[in-house]
Image 1: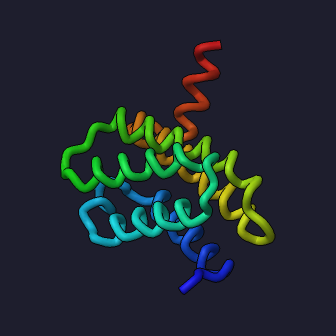
Image 2 (image 1 turned 45 degrees about the vertical axis):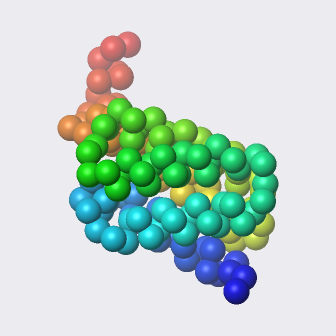
Length: 133
């Protein structure tokens, strides 16, 4: 059964919402594994060689989170690359799906930053960058 655009949009929205939460806590729940698997299948279904790195990174992220050990540096790298590549892939989306793909990419980048520096809030990052100037 082929997914409709609305189903894709709901999946993109739910993934972006999930990334806004505590990813380590979410990884202990079965839902994250299912979301990542659906995302892998959706990207594969697009049958676009430009999206190949996204599939590889998603598979690595799924395997790493499923292992129960958390290397924040690796997770941050994967999420960051997924964010960049997801934003780039938005050009392949159409209609209301395109802004959702872009939002998902931005959520991935924020999640990457949060994992790589878990103790700092965005306001702290701004203060630190202003002090460095």
